[in-house]
Image (tube, rainbow, N blue to C red; front, side):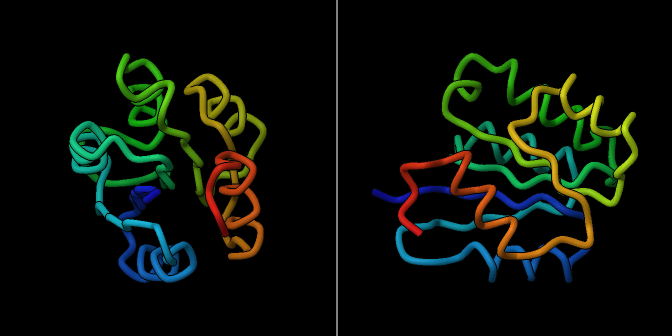
Length: 127
């Protein structure tokens, strides 16, 4: 069984690190550089996991994309959203909860912690 993972971050270096960290057997990796493209691609791909930055250019930030995914009848039961951001204040965590994210990690991040978080969100993934 193949799992689709979408990485959405405006920094190319971070996207590359995430793509390498999460890539592997039975994983189809995709990326987007802003919230608008991330939302569009999520609707099309219906990914298992979206790793999503919060602060990005465009009309949609990560909180908005997360909330749209969690409100979408097709995506809400299938797609887990991990917010991965430099915003680490308590108000930011609250906004993540309000957006219904499945996990909230702050940058700089540990690739191992990210893998463990994805595993927790998606226990059926074979790491």
